[in-house]
Length: 71
Image 1: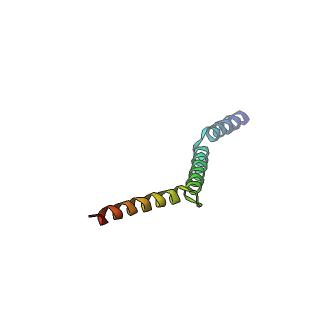
Image 2: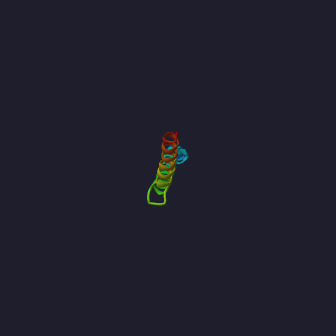
Image 3: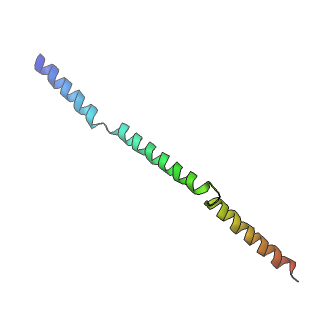
């Protein structure tokens, strides 16, 4: 009877140890947080991508407006 209990306990522990779903979920959560931090770093601040795009769009708009106003 003790041997049977030991075997059942080992089988239960082996199935618990081999289950990697929780670890994978944590890895995906860490990757998601890292990507969010990168996106925030790129789009935030005065020297970020957002201000560069706004400057480029303003320049393009000014060039189009000046091109349309010349005869």
